[in-house]
Image (cartoon, rainbow, N blue to C red; front, top):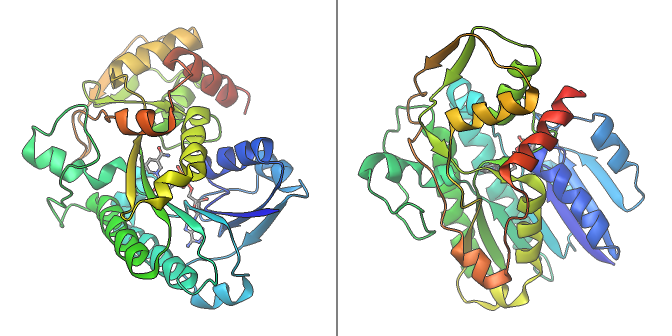
Length: 329
Ligand SMILES: NC(=O)c1ccc[n+]([C@@H]2O[C@H](COP(=O)([O-])OP(=O)(O)OC[C@H]3O[C@@H](n4cnc5c(N)ncnc54)[C@H](O)[C@@H]3O)[C@@H](O)[C@H]2O)c1
């Protein structure tokens, strides 16, 4: 039986990843650690946790004592736990930095002593290179993995998150090299789908449409993002984890995961108005939050080439599934 650990597994990506692992990998036991800071023991998560192949452990990964209760023989570790959600970057930047960095350091310190090292996947973020995009204005679009990573303004609380991911990548690279931990880093780009909370742009717009809010506030309509449906996203993560050759590399490999389709927030809202069969009479356009980049589009040719991954869900279909889920909440 393979032993898989998913940290932050009660959250958005974790929940869908666990579902995928349960379906795909019948010969595995899945351990889930989450302190429920953001993830919830809601109906969806409780029903998945009732599966006898899942063991849910509620605990805080910043607490060193917590690790004493854990076994040290996992085959795969997907490290997702972090404080995520744009609101928190501005409201509690010190906690974002502390939790995101400390959870990662503690985990790396824990697994460096495993008798057999697990395969380790760290979820960084597109925000790790957002500072470079903001500063140089001319990074290649679509953006490949090997662009510079910078924090362009330590006084802007938004960079607490990007900064924690940037330093996280460096931690993973050097712990992996020093302690021979077979590791990869992925940078998710705007994953969306059911059970994504209420803060991400797609749930937030969907909920405002469901509530028929008029006038309708639309933040940064001209900005563009690439939106990747969650089932495609978790498939990418699992494919990477299963590809032995990636872990044979001397260096830690880094992959962008996202869609190649660039969509403006205005276009996104138009799509959702159509799906919701409702449109406000008045739209109030609001400026972007400080530090939010104008364009973001990942170059995903590396993951496509190495594991043959391609997104399967069109934006229209993904938005419809997501909207329907929020409508039936
Ligand atoms: N959703 C995206 O599009 C996206 C984009 C870029 C990066 N990421 C990264 O992917 C990972 C998962 O993202 P998500 O969208 O599922 O976020 P999420 O907030 O839904 O999930 C993170 C989970 O970590 C848990 N957690 C936080 N602090 C913890 C601690 N100290 N101990 C144990 N658990 C803790 C939270 O309770 C939550 O359930 C995060 O690292 C995030 O930064 C996500």
